[in-house]
Amino acid sequence: MDITEQDALIVVDVQNDFCPGGALAVLGGDMVVPAINRVIPKFEHLFYSRDWHPGDHCSFSFAPEYVDGSWPEHCVENTPGAEFHGGLMVPLDATIIDKGTDRDAECYSAFGNPRLEAALRDKGITRVFVAGLATDYCVKATALDALHAGFETILIEDGCRGVNDQTVAEALVEMEAAGIPRVRSAAIAE
Ligand code: VGL
Ligand code: ZN
Image (cartoon, rainbow, N blue to C red; front, side, top):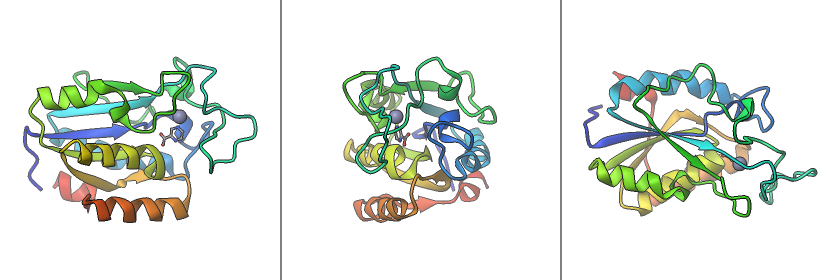
């Protein structure tokens, strides 16, 4: 697959708290790392979002239900859980996009931070590839927002993992129906 200077990679929330051992671990969350690292050298434009919450963020709950948008405390700004997975390649010229920084608002999409869309437009990007965690929450929200903002949007299927099998399956159907195809990392890297 041909990747050009009009393409960007958006890596969503590949942070310790979403990986095994983390506060809100996604099953196999760390498995996205080799898939993402494989495609990084192909892209000139790299964006990495971070879930970056204040300690009293409104999504935190002591009795999380995982179905109504309440979660155990996770990705608190400047804590080890909020750091990128240690194996993830993060080139020095990559742009980091923090989101969920407002205590009173949930923010699944990386486009919740207006810097992302502004930077994509500024660089003349027309197509984005999306990967990361979690497929059924922040990856889905980011990919759908990218599409609605007018970018051709492609999901890197082995570069994503989700919270719940059922909602992952639904998310994949929803994204596909919206017009977001899936590609495997090997097809990009080759
Ligand atoms: C996420 C739940 C809560 C995600 C972030 O990155 O998918 N999920 N905060
Ligand atoms: Zn969060």
